[in-house]
Amino acid sequence: MNTLGQIVQNGLSLLAVFVFLMTFHWRVSLLLVASFVPGLIVQIGSADKMFQFYGATTERERQTNYFHHLLTSTESAKEARIFGFGETIRHWYRDLRTALCSEKIRVQYLRLILEFSVKLGTSAAQFSA
Image (cartoon, rainbow, N blue to C red; front, side):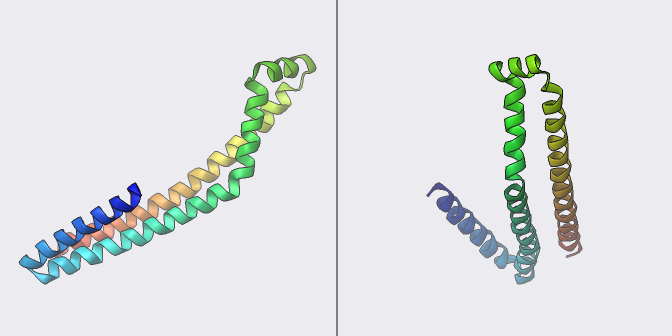
């Protein structure tokens, strides 16, 4: 319910600013809406991409957490040292973690480029008006 209240509050604030700007000139209000919509679309699309990324990588994240547990918990670490398979687990952990981090960086880099492009275009439109 708190989130719904924030959405309503932010919507009312946006409406109040819109009405306030309408008193100056209708083009200013139109520019505000025109600059707001592309950013909103990019944010929704980016959130969807991150949701898909986390859904696709959940299994591998759990594997890395399990390998981390095997390497760091007291009982498992002792067994890994005694039986000599600690290096193998460390190698699996490092490979999985490296792959996950590089995929996440790639997704966030694309998101950053897209958001920067939209904000740059929005700023250019606002300053040209």
